[in-house]
Length: 132
Image 1 (cartoon, one colour):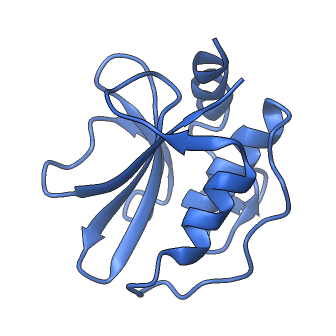
Image 2 (cartoon, one colour):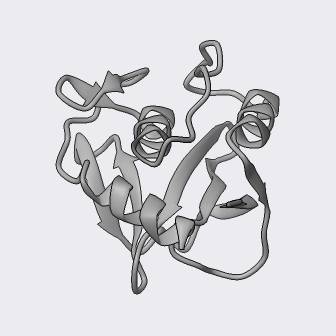
Image 3 (cartoon, rainbow, N blue to C red):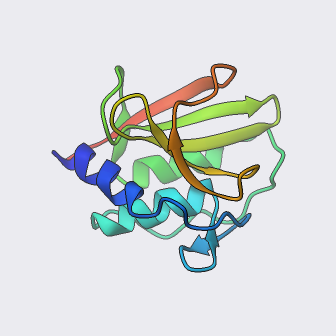
């Protein structure tokens, strides 16, 4: 399944360094960089959205990028699903569903790409699944 391929693609970036606005796994990725690199690995990444502020409440750029990538609204919890969650009131964050309870995401505090359960305080605003 294409979703499992996306989850495996994201896992190849585990332990890559974190860097805000990072787009290169060798020098660092942020959450959008991780999504873009993972989508590229499965042949699905269009041009990246134009920059964004670290703290913001405008998620329109994420929504348009999802559609351009072939990500469609989804329910449930399947490997490869992409979630947009509110980490704080002014901080959206993107993560990719891995296997078991894990999500793969760029962890600013740990300064690297990690896999693990998401924080129960995150409010998932959108969930997408890659179409064939």
